[in-house]
Image (cartoon, rainbow, N blue to C red; front, side, top):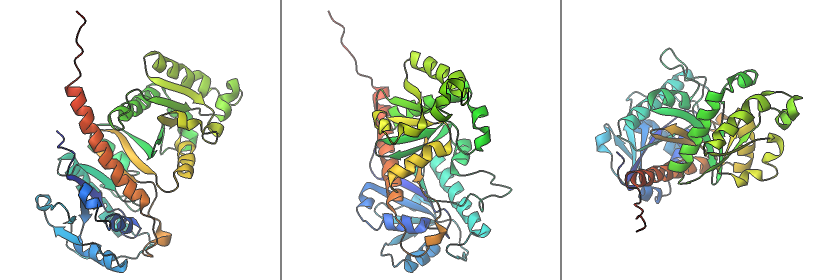
Length: 348
């Protein structure tokens, strides 16, 4: 059960400590008004966060806690997950630092599962230095998909622009073989349901991009669009979902056609993320749709090249916090509406 949309507890996994994650987290909460919207809990160590704060000349006040029942509203809480010191070399890939990123993320996910935090916002990790015998996942989303209920789908969000993917972190050579009827139906339904419960859009319109240039040009440049995508989209549309396409991807964004839809689903990673990041201007958010819990993250990586210099743009992380709060409130509203549908009087 969700509580009321007040004093929402935001769990924050600290990500790669040698990257810009800690900086964008601290900068986000330098604005004290953020603490009127939510209560942050950073899963890390108060000493290491104080060191980073000093290095950045940050003025935020940190409140160290040892247990989650010690969380104080109106404070930037830092849960002490470890006591030992951590040697930081800002801007450098370090396997040991990767271990602490995993420790933070796993603990924050556990707290999310148990309802000890309401939403999760993840700072950027390095996908290489987090790998170990106990953690073999390409990134956040794959682990969350294992630990939480539902089917995870990466949905990139910036205002009314929402871009999802039929396939995500797979080689381009394997994309076509993954585009099965079952997968397409599942992804479209996940996006549709998320638009309804997470974004309060009652009858969402969804556009799907074709796999091949010009959607295959009638089979001249590939047959997948005609043989797979078009028949599946027709079936889905006939069952009541407002799904349209496939659309040729090259002109879809440049022409502004995307603005006519509540979400766009691309066939593969770069087809969707390149135009999204071009249009979002560093304010985009990665939202993991399809799960029973809420997770968001900024749309950038560790940015080792500028780590520790105090120049990192924190807007994307701030927007990730805002979106997590908005989705939380939207789900409360959706649950209330679902439990108490309007009764329509029958005509006498």
